[in-house]
Image 1 (spheres, rainbow, N blue to C red):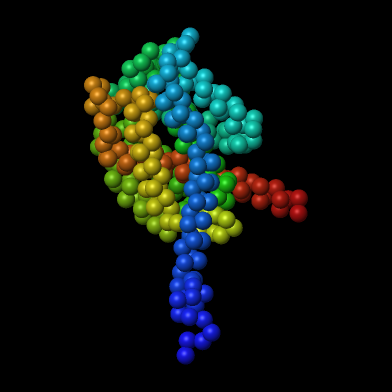
Image 2 (tube, helix red, strand yellow):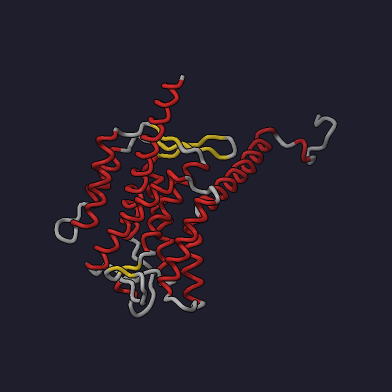
Length: 286
């Protein structure tokens, strides 16, 4: 006996099938929500990419291209703070990244790792000042995503271990030109230090978690994709791209992963310090 309804009736589907369909629909909705929050967090990088494309395809008057890019980045940074998309605390973090990135650019251009071949009034030792904003935009993304997704850290390593590790990774970008490149040793050490660390985030009221090392790899890979777009539009130029554009070597993913780790460690450490300060203030007024 099949009962009142026929077996072909859609309402007679087994509960497990309907549950599976509902799970797929829910997962897709959550993925879309997650993608939307990520896109909102990338507003500064998106503006930089759009400006690179615009100034490449449509020459602007009065100033060289690099100078227009600096003007656009400055205006965008002002608007981000003015509109409330970034807080003043986040601006301080982003400014720190601008300085760190610019120092790296000055050194790498001097060593011939890449170049900025176009003219510009706002170039310092061959490096246009807008280049620092490309690093700052990574910090902007991290700060925005941290706030929008309500990021929390689980089993974060101690301060005395995190800070020297970040410093060693950053210094290796300089010292490997004169000494042994220890990036793979540093990568192994990162795996060891953060093996038990997780990052949790919230999407649509539901909390998820991800191994911290995996998040480093994913962000580094997507920055490598962004790097290909940036070099295509002439943001900078590698030696093998002097005659014609070519895909950036996949090995650069390791460099970006390490730079992301430095960025993340700085942001996470400052967030932790800020949280501890707020907790102490609240405890003092309690």
